[in-house]
Image 1: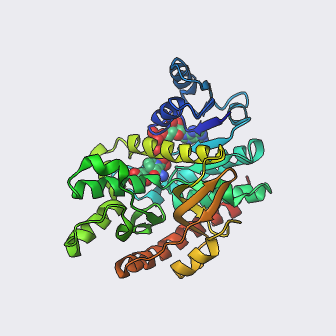
Image 2: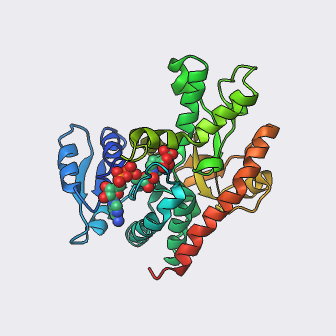
Image 3: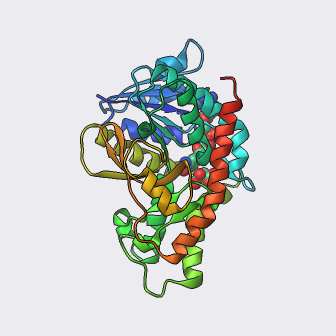
Length: 334
Ligand SMILES: NC(=O)c1ccc[n+]([C@@H]2O[C@H](COP(=O)([O-])OP(=O)(O)OC[C@H]3O[C@@H](n4cnc5c(N)ncnc54)[C@H](O)[C@@H]3O)[C@@H](O)[C@H]2O)c1
Ligand SMILES: O=C(O)C[C@H](O)C(=O)O
């Protein structure tokens, strides 16, 4: 029995993500919460002939508490998306408070749930959730995840495109580490399951790295003011949620990339810090999942000089973003 909850369920990501969760036999109960439209979204999804029982709540009458009661996994895509010309950091002002409020609800009602944070800027919103959980004395670093799966999905797609074979896309795996914005997104193309052609160097390599780092901007520009990635994000968010649920159900050997707390009481955090060469509190890396969440944070392994440079370039922004999230929560009265 697995109760999955989506906070921000009526939004551009929330609706297709809720559909994918409802479509899965891994989910037996689906709780939907938003400040608008959740009763309609829930009624609509509830007609689909799959096992999950669906309920939708709005803020009045303890809606958040009702949605979160009994939750095993909570996915958070609540918050505003970018418009052309904005960075993810520009969203912080609005989304920090939204995420803090929702995290307070989870820490109070479902402190043991796995929490998957999609709301941007992920590099700062994950630290907010962690600090809220610490304030409530319920922090478990193994159970709070920043969702960076979309970067991996994009990298795999773009590599398949370069290899000229889209049929390969589902099998291509490219580790993407660091964080989730601009230069903090570091693709480890040398570790692609399907190597790039040997002449794929210089400008060609730089252009691919840039496309992976700024893939989000490509969508924001194409949507021309109507938001950012929603459908590919719903796909990526569901993929990650299914991995967390399968690991919870006892399936072995599940590895997924995620932005996690590095002092996690899980093997690998300290070793990874040494590889990065910086005392960062968070980093996105492939993590091995088990029934209780993170079991092991995997090392970067063998990387090229170019990839080392990308990591060096990511560290200052990452560090700043993380501190912004922590400082916000320390100042707050919630
Ligand atoms: N991590 C990633 O890879 C990734 C990818 C794409 C988008 N995002 C981020 O996801 C967020 C959502 O994007 P979207 O396109 O779905 O936006 P959207 O505006 O379409 O939907 C957001 C939803 O959140 C709801 N909401 C706002 N405040 C809320 C609150 N306090 N409680 C519950 N719900 C609330 C809104 O009513 C809306 O339905 C953005 O911050 C975006 O930048 C992250
Ligand atoms: O680009 C954005 O603002 C949304 C998201 O983080 C993405 O990578 O698509």
